[in-house]
Length: 58
Image (tube, rainbow, N blue to C red; front, side, top):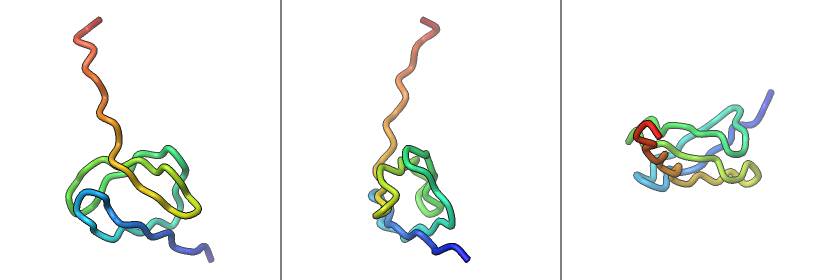
């Protein structure tokens, strides 16, 4: 049985739990819907995911 990984959303402070997650993975907060990046797994740390720049077809 694997341990639950728990962290709080940096945007709305909702508690988010994962059974499995990888570093640099993008996840979505189930409460506020913001994209989050897993910056560390042990301990589990979430930060707002960087916004992708528009390339405007270039």
